[in-house]
Image 1 (cartoon, rainbow, N blue to C red):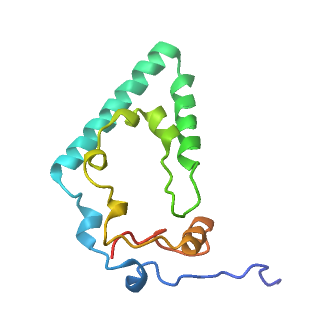
Image 2: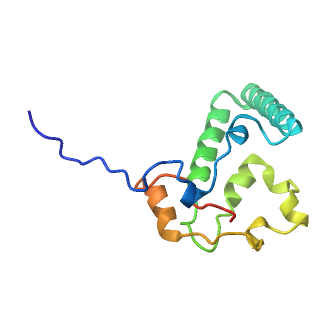
Image 3: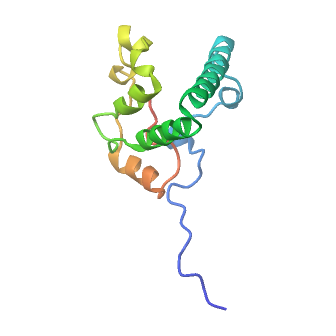
Length: 141
């Protein structure tokens, strides 16, 4: 019997590293931030399903599949972790969220907060390449 050629590695240790990523709350993983948010998300999901059915009936069954493929391609296109965040402009144009008016449009951007922890580019690339576990960047102190 031959020994395996690769060595399993665990760079970064445990996924719930409280010193690196902060304390993790169980309630936030189970329950959304507000009941209205979950209702909004379910309504948006049903609207997207209805839109897919209308597009499939109008343009044929392949058109929604092509749109899904475009969405998958554009969701993967990002800048490397660093000082300039990815805007995901192509994905916003395809999904129609380009016209949405969010809180960051009239309030300050959370990345400009005083408690925002700067991004560690090396750790971000390790997470993206699968060498380390955890979020790319713990966002706030």
